[in-house]
Image 1 (cartoon, rainbow, N blue to C red):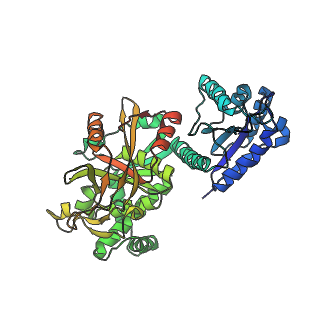
Image 2 (image 1 turned 60 degrees about the vertical axis):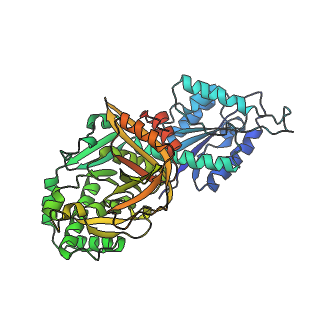
Length: 466
């Protein structure tokens, strides 16, 4: 994968000690590379002290940014001293990517005129003007921070995640494979609203997928390679040979849709036609896709696919869509989150076992091979989901953890016990807010990253359930 790259920009102001900018340029390069990222930086000789002060210097920097368009994921605007807001806004008002505002701290004992920075104050001067110009930017804690500090390293990781979410969500292709199941009105969505946010929906009829599957031959090298891939992914030893071939063919066809239509995420109508006519359940195929970095939601839950993609970008790891499914005894802050088997192996406590879907087997034995059963591993998590309403996308996120609490072996599917602070009040807010019975999860805590990306840059409506 290409390293994330930041464009570095530095401020200047005539009456301040501009010599400090040279050290800041060196500091920021060290900080960015130490965090594992790349950078581009304008030649220091092009402006006084290598910073931006005047409108002409701002225009020069803006021109340089334009010449490097597409080569950077975000801009870090560093204020080693009090900034000139006119040069700053001229330089960055058309950056088109997230902008991190970083200001240097002053040091006790170095408050004489040759060393005092006043960046604490100057940062407000810049952010005020950016607000006046309606140019979005990111500010993180603490208000002033040295680039070579551990706190700034955390700022960099968070800012990189914000950039990934913003740039990855601005415009992407979301596949809708099959129509919404009539019984599941809870997953209805507004395709036009999604398009307003840059989400292009590509729809495919399930009958076409079935026809493509039926055209595939058992000895097709692509089918045989897919069988090998799937058997190396999970435990398929219980799956009958005929169902194994069908699962592989469905996976191949989904891959073809992904490649031909450049799908970044998808939602699949997973029942009951696949079980009735193909005699398979596609859970494990969705699991494998999510571990490959292709966000895949079940039950045609397009809204969950949106939040799954955002969390995939933030965490650079797999995501999953789960049911708010069961209470866990009398503990009001614990809940069993579950789905039949689309959870990525990387989110599970061990290798899954591919089984027959027990709900379908009850009335039609042999009709649902493909659930990837197991347990979700203990880990910190972010939970999030969204809805389309009145032409808007409304989203929430919160943070929790999966515990190592035991769920009895007879519990079907892939589930885990989540401990969520103040769960009962959050459930009330979700219910009254019209959110569905699904939530999406990823490993790690990214609520603030998501909130910053969605509200500051992407224009989503945010609901705070905490």
